[in-house]
Length: 418
Image (cartoon, rainbow, N blue to C red; front, side, top):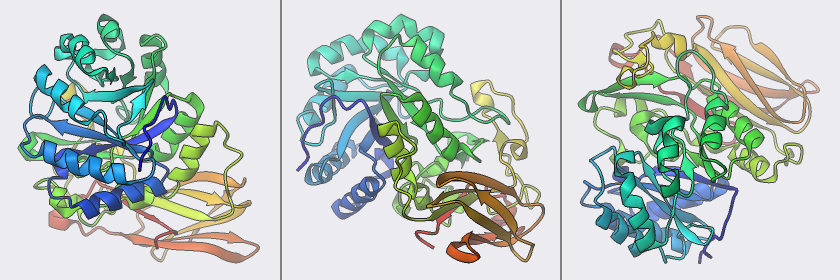
């Protein structure tokens, strides 16, 4: 049974879309929780929309499964953007229904509660806090750092949704530092995400933000910045391509199967124990490097291989300049390797000559290799003293696009699962 968490300033959660879990069985919940624990994830942030009739039933399944697990924790994240704003009385009743469960995550002894957006209902939160005793850590990112000061007295901490770079730039910690300064010492929950691509015309969504090196870079930034909490975006938001959990077909939104079904992302969890342990310890030199692991990801189609499907780089609906998506999502193979000692890394695309890279230190090393017009399966190896220590083969890079449309999602794999 779980023991309620008390003031854990360094914990890592994965954002979990309850709306994609209506069909999940208790066994699937238990399996997903087990997979998250193997990755050293501490719990799920349960995103819930007020319009879904099945929300309470799914929450019951989630808490039952987490209660039965060892030290796995949950907290509610009320979605005010999808399906409309939550009535304050329903927020209160939902928090109170689950706040005493064994797996409810507590921060400073209070049940942690978050949101996705909802600053228009900021005035509800003093009453919500009074009626529930919760620790309110909303994601009112649309206010901007300058706007958060007007509601600072109503919140206990802040979760930023600003997890992706805008344009053809790599993500830095600048926005995190700005948010941390704006909230004047209150706890900050830092967002980490590996990717973003969505093509869901029914919701007027068709854009991407740069992923590329993001999964590796962002964890280095977490280790550097040492935020109070971390939230991974996401465990199972298949429609936006940033899922790191198993694919449950019933949860894939209509129209997303084209770019999701053959693109599992489970291997993005392979190196999470090392990243998360380094974040919690603040020590990148004490990693267990007794095993050698390759994790790789790349798009299956070059940017010149088919139609871009009307996808834009950046989201014009947020006032961002629409760019050619090929400027943001590069034709490269990305790989992160964990090596027990300095090693040579080889990457070979199809029949092309291999590229040789050098992992100069034991521990985590990150690289990228351009496609350069090459297609075919991608072969990876860690080589030491002339011997292959670990190898993996990834799916082919191909000019043959399904329905003529470039798949802007990533294929992800690992030597642990190959």
